[in-house]
Amino acid sequence: MAKRRKARLRGTRTATRIEQRKLLERVAQLKEKPELLLPKCHHPAGECPYPGVREQLEQAVQPDERGFLGRMFGRRLKDPLALALRASLSLLDTGKAPVMAVARYPTGEVGYVLRGQSIPKERLIGVQNFHHRTWRALAHLAYVRRNDIWLYSLPKQLICTGRSPALPPELWDGLRSGLPRGWSDSDGEGLTLRCVSLDRAVRLPAAGWRRSNRKSLMDLLEHQHASDAVSDWEVDAATPLDALAPPADCPALEEYRAGRLTDAELWIRLGDWQRERTAEGDAPGVIHGSELLAPQEFSARLSLSGHDARIARELLERYAGAVAVEALTLGALASATWKPVGQKLLAEWGGTPDEREPLAQLRDALAQAKIQDALAVLPVLEGLPPLPALADRAVRLLRTGRNEVLLRELATAAEASHSEQALAWAILRHTGSAAGREWQFSREVREFADELRPVFEVAAAAEGDDYANALHELGRLAGAEF
Image: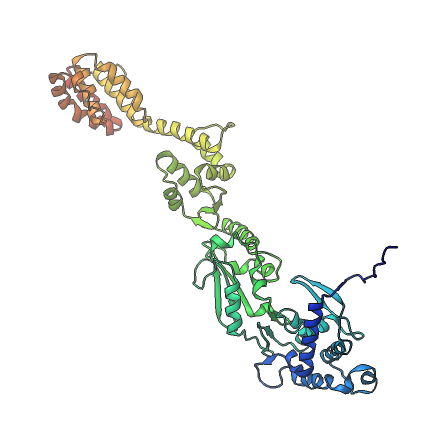
């Protein structure tokens, strides 16, 4: 017949012999020195309840307080910690503790032996595990709440600072060394946690801040016990957008202080909040990540020039406030400002909206507008002789940026009349395209080009009547006045 297993109550476990021996040794220590349960006080007299608690603990270890007769006829113990101590001392009478209850907390699991009636488990855990930095504090939480005192759990003892916070330097050293790599003691941008009572701070730079999945403030508070332990800590964030949207006004900071956000979640929430507030302001520029780039800085960062530089400038000057973009590109800027600004700008440049990307539409419209603007200042002259006609076509191609078309025109002119060859050589030299082409032009042609070149350069920069006069002068030099 199979051996029947003994039933075990839910939430309990069988203690090993080593666990039982160590527990009994700890209880024996408390019998000899009950003051091991008490913190060391660093405050003026009368700011904590522990002098009265000490008297009760000393009574609890007296021989006549133990056992049934002690409970019936002994001195009345009122303090819960003393009652928990007297109940735990009964383990010495049995000499064993085979069954241990298990309590689960966010910081882990802890075993203890149930003794006494109506004694809170936190008191029993704190008494029976007074050697443990985390569990010993459980026995004192009721004192903290009732008397509004501050307790700090160091590796080897508790410290009570009365009704005022006073973080021990040795605890700070332990907290500081427990932080992951990346935290520094210097000032600058990032997440800063400062202990007010000790006046010391640590900072996590932006690169580590946005990747941290910890709740670093809660980690620092692990061994600090008070009704409002976080009140001794300041949380500050420094980003490039601080001047336009101060982080102190962000609601996410209070959620972080309450332990509801990780470091990275605070980074995201704060960044979103600052970008929204900055975009609502009047300062022009581009918001990317936690940066606000002025219009000139945006163009310089992307090395914009020509038409692209003008598109960026026009969009940012017309947009009310700053523009938030996901990617730091001109295309992202054009898309973000398309409805309020870009479509109006497109219409001003003579473009019509289509299905292409906004930037492509703006580029084409600006190119066409530039062509029209460049040609608008040049008068239309009818019946020009071949040489002035070639000069007129060349100037119009130069001003509209169609250099490849101009080179094809000049290649044809190099095979035409003597005067047209000379003008072609003059234009090639004017545009810096003459290298390696000397063999195509005779010495006489190049000498005549030296006379034509100054007049062509005047035409290339002239407008209105000055332009017409320059073409007339070219015709005169070629013997073909009009």
